[in-house]
Image (cartoon, rainbow, N blue to C red; front, top):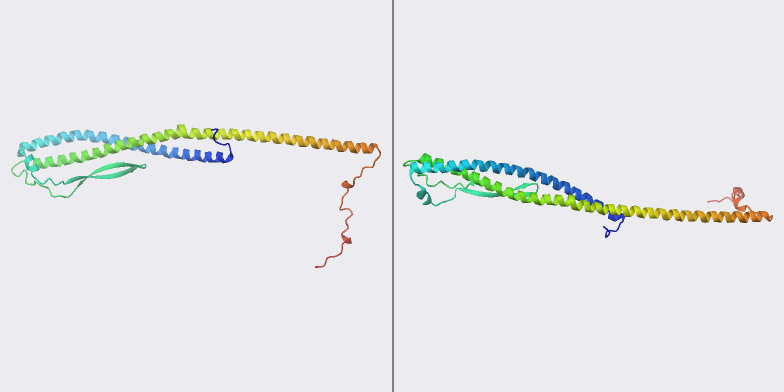
Length: 252
């Protein structure tokens, strides 16, 4: 603090710094609160998705077993196809309070379904059920991956935001306030010194004037004692002898 000159200009500068720091602290606090709300929503969604995926995974595996029992082992026929992807994962960005969160989405490419002849001999319905259940499981898996990734990213953003809030609240703003208090104390001390100095100068002037007045009174008293007439010309009104009629008229 001693490195900062205690001047009015520096006082104004640090007042502006304090105002900016408080404004930033309020904004970061609101951001942290918004991230916290979203963080809880993500945690709830992840818990619900995981609990549902457990049942979906068991149901899909059981339906696959039923289809193999009804239609035989059809995995070889499936692997003989061209394996063109009918489903892909799209990546996007979700902005939450200035934080960019990755979002994964499920979308179909529109490719024609292969191995449509599977199950013609038997078990076709079971194979269709397997396809639907595994499609639903894949959608939940992509959703869970999106939630988990966003959750981790949001957690890191919350930590950074909370560190900034704590730094402003516990370090920056108190430090600026300490500098302002130091400047105020020094300026008050300078004002007291100036006031004391002015009082001393005023008292000296008054003493000199009183001494001069006493000296003049003493001289006048001495002259009166000697019988000397003291002139009071200075006390006469100089405008008393002025007559405006004596002046000539001025013609323009």
